[in-house]
Length: 484
Image 1: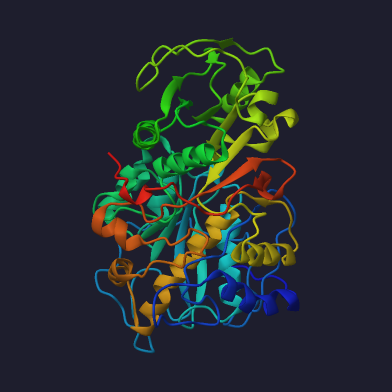
Image 2 (image 1 turned 90 degrees about the vertical axis):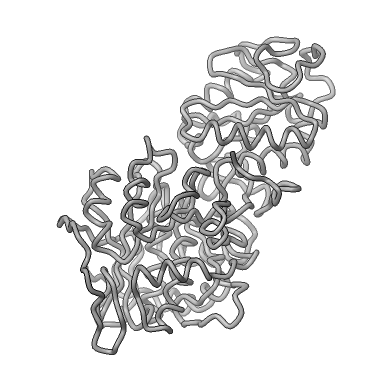
């Protein structure tokens, strides 16, 4: 791995503060290290959309740590893991990806979805390594050569590293997930669907799944007055691998809150009585929907009850803005999407305040101690403009630290030990970046590890393109929700 210039003293000095602020855990008596702690990843990942890469600190093995965005690239395909776990010189039992000097984790990221995720993971790595590493070893993050598909990346990395970090939201067919299950490679991912939660060897989804994101977003619309009790919520699900799951979650929520769901489709008229819409579509589709529903625009609109809506038909509703949420009356309905549907470069300036984004971590500009600590470290590294998934990357790395440190104490760094540790890992602190995420619940019951999410306004001028509305919160009664 290439070495580069020494990190500034302020960044190294800030490492201890950062990890203390971001790694609180509810696990009693958990072991702690000066590098990563044992906390539940209250730290975030702010991935840059520009700016220079920061320099790293002095590596424990001598040399200079790599820059935050720098990852090792593997070009060698390894088709089998060692059949016998080796023992290192200090008596540590180790598996693939571990030697006397380093612990190697593979990173498989859909480039189109990255948006700061890689920067968050490598920021975590650099801070850990500047503090002495884990178990006396530096953390190495290895990726496939540029241009590799996620499937090709798995072929090159899956069996040669101790475990994986995966980001492939809504990937076509999620073929790589099937391979991970078959090979039972320990894998952590920040986002996923209910289908990712079941089956031996499935990746552990640390954040709220897509259906829970939608439920929490709908609950926020109701509590903020954007959707009146007894009213209607538009639902537009186009080109979404998790459309059926989102629809199931929203139906569960609507039945409990006297809300009628109205199915919408791109290019078709939107009833003017619809005051808010949950939409999962490509960014251009979301922007087209904003334009079509703008009161100042010329998009199509209809009045009366919808055809094809779910729930009871109900009486016809006059298509006026009277009596609606003030923002709706002035400019058009509130639209909520996820990061998959929002790109700042597609966003019309006159739509600020009408598009809200649901995320599995707080937004990069949130008033949250862990977010502030990571944001400071990111800025001290010499970069600006964090991407919206920076916190997801950092928090995923911190979860790896929570797993590896107890394994180090037990002197066993193997995949089998990871599986055992995941099943016994205590929930993270409620102040962590994924909230009180509980991987053991997924492994034992097939339920989402996290049931909280955050809401932000889309704003290209804000950090990560998101202006925070809420910190992590959940819909009332979400503990009783079961997917499917």
